[in-house]
Image (cartoon, rainbow, N blue to C red; front, side, top):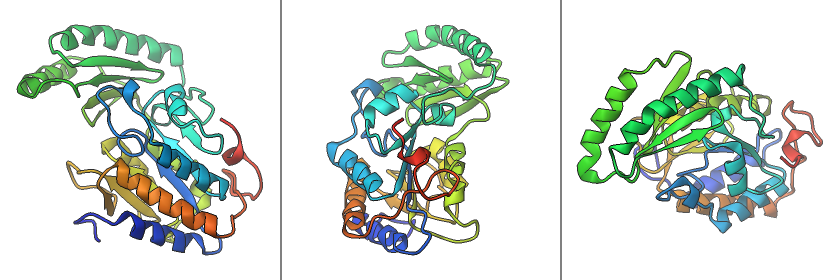
Length: 288
């Protein structure tokens, strides 16, 4: 089905598996975590990646696919949710690399600014039951998933007024699914995708290059590989997406990955390729 409707997970898996059989295929999964692999939960700490999804990711990595997760969570949290040695995890929208190292220049100055912003936001969230602040290594998240429906209009107005009164120079402001992210400028999930740019040809479409995401922060991931892979938006999109394919939920993502893993196991596992494109070991096979 086209981008105007929902796609069948198994049909998408067949497309990716067919492309993966070609010589020099990318055989790469680049995915968001929350809302894509892990169903949303009332709080981030309650979220879990289904065991079937983890098994499929592990099987794809074992079959020679590069599997990387680009999460807005702190690296340590994201890694705990995807504890698979063969799967790479990047945290804080790419500001933490696959080993959890913070890439932000002058991290101490950023931390001080974020601490100040968190302190300034506490009176705001204290006014609305169900709103809370999450401090991250390279950012700050103001969550509102649990704000009651009859208070959401007042919350949105108060939140927007709070933002308008802040000095956010050098800070990127990105709304997500029931969250407002304030993070170090210059970092997004597209940077993670470009770490793997050597895996695909610049002008060639390769549907074994799969990107998966569910909200506006994942549009950077889609943009980095636009026109060169199978980009899949999960759930209802609030606005037009760069992804041409649609799956309804993390449950359908699990179905897609499970079918793709079955196809990968049935075929000959390709040799693993590192960041630079050379066959053999490299970062994609290391424990992180």
